[in-house]
Length: 466
Ligand code: SF4
Image (cartoon, rainbow, N blue to C red; front, side, top):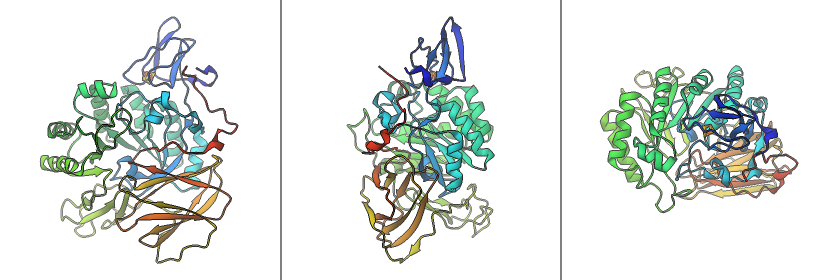
């Protein structure tokens, strides 16, 4: 462990001389001196628990709010997705195992940000929401709290996407500075949690109830994994618990799984299984049920509960407000919808121009969508975050948008907008170079890029796990 980079953590108690117990998550690790806890990013130094990942982050990435299984808050809003490293769980099926499990981490990917830098990045790029996501924000608690408070002071909304294996006291702090909670419930089976995630079920249920009782904005999701939690009985248990403890109005997402980490012997979750889960939930009385990581027409739209009008139309990660006024009422019957901030600004990406001519710019990067990958992260190589302007042409629907990158933002998502869009071409004129990485599913942070120059002069190796 490189003890020089630690910082005194919150949520721990001393229990005997030179020993301390971390109380951030229910695991209550008691690392010996100069050793890390289970998550790999908090450890004991001189009898105190320190956090070693304050400000240590994967590259900030501009995405869309729907990547976070959030469908009823500012549809289509751009978000600044922030992920760090380590996790308080160890799911056999983890979709972000290369960053959540520190033994697999490529330290060249880790950058250093301050709360002020991230807030400036949001403001300069007109990104209205900062999202704590990917590996799991629980183990980044101190940085999340400090940055979220600063973000809110600057008018930026804050989003927390988590498996929520966390203690009650830290959640009280989150409730003071997080606007949107997107929480995943993996199963209603404690044995599943113990075997497949190395965590336990009850604390997760208790903390979800804590958020629900607070009245904070909440959406729930369950990753549906073949042979693990995809039976009708599994799904019904989840639905029954949600109905009883959170209510029928909470948006519930059943999310398709792609084979990953130690769970690769199965296929991607089939659409029939997801549809069956959706039908069961609707039959039992859930009002808003969505199917994540799918491109099924109509199944992910938000419908007016009174007159059946389509309020929000969705394709993959894209959404368009169809029939909502500024007060979020149905334009057909006037019924109040559950959508908050339906028209939150998404400026800085120019409005698409139909039929526009392809630009005459010297460099280009072409991406074709496949069944496997219908989104991509676009990375500016070098890791220095050069200011740049890109023009993006949608193949098949012949639309152009112009996109600006500034304040160090050098990574963003592009996602298929419709069945007719077969790919995109990115054009630019600057000296920058760009690369794309396939995003397999929402909230997936693809790695393995060839950005060798990002090793640079930064001291980014912050843990010595040997
Ligand atoms: S946050 Fe990390 S060190 Fe603390 S109890 Fe959880 S796994 Fe252990």
